[in-house]
Image (cartoon, rainbow, N blue to C red; front, side, top):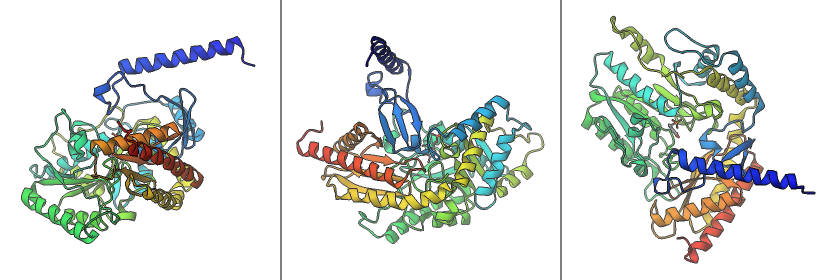
Length: 472
Ligand SMILES: Cc1ncc(COP(=O)(O)O)c(C=O)c1O
């Protein structure tokens, strides 16, 4: 029986919720906020999570098909991880990481990362997130060449459609046209090559031809700038936020070899592809046959439970930097108050232990192909232009059937699909004309079936809206 008190409590909860939304709209500037409707939109307030599912402040449940933001590995509400965080916070919440001061979790984590990563990446520089790790890697590349008496070796190669973060330097390395707005970007020493995405199912040329084109451009750009002026190439093995773009087979290895030949450092941005999303802790060597000079990691390193980033650095680089440190100023002046934060590192250590114990990478290798196979069924919808991805990173690209790409009509269509998914209890990430998917790594085949069923319903509804001219 519903009592008067229940009704009053419900009314109070509703009011609290409305106050929260109003305060959010009034005071918070969200990342990638739509400034055209600043303060007008109601935010989705996610308050609970368990496994692959989350619940919003109104009690509505969703299957989270984006893993928070590519970061969820072991699932929401993992008590072991929460306990590790609480234990560390109780024992020692924070102390400076500067100079010779360290913390046990940071040391333990660095040791684990050195063990898990390929080649001689035995030195870890902790940061606070992916952006600051990218920033630090570029600074390290500059330092490395400067201390060898080659300060002019400072140019950086990157690609269109790349996403590397949001500090001034990381944002300047990004190559997504839609993100270039009224902000300032460094252009003096940053060079954007073509987007390397290749999809054999829709491509007009063969993978070999596309690879040749990309490598030719790569070599010509090096020749133009001069290898003696280039510090590093920064590259995601698969471009994630740019639209889940996979280069043609052999691209990563061939560009890495060209870099090696020209003494250009290869920085592999594994913020998304690392920590299991492609079925391995790091994909660079196992999947793409490369031994980068630096690997960038963040997100999945703590399963999203704590903010943390890291640059894994080759011994070759740190040895050279150490040997060449100037006598009067031997200081490596890069780092953050929260570099290697003990609570974040304790979360990462526990996350790795759980991932290893439960063989989460093996699980991804098993369910990943099923995920892609089931998603590919969606190609039968006329409004689906392409479905692409690799293991647990994927996207569905929509179009009205007229012109492909992120034009206004295609974007409106994809946004409609996303909205219908959300209505039906599935969170996918809307980006331009894409629905991006990156579920928590513990996702089961039955969850995948549910994701596909909801997507089918949403595509069907959006397709009918398009036909009926009801997209505006
Ligand atoms: C490939 C890649 N690199 C770097 C970053 C930046 O990481 P963060 O947002 O933690 O700064 C991201 C974030 O999405 C990313 O996808």
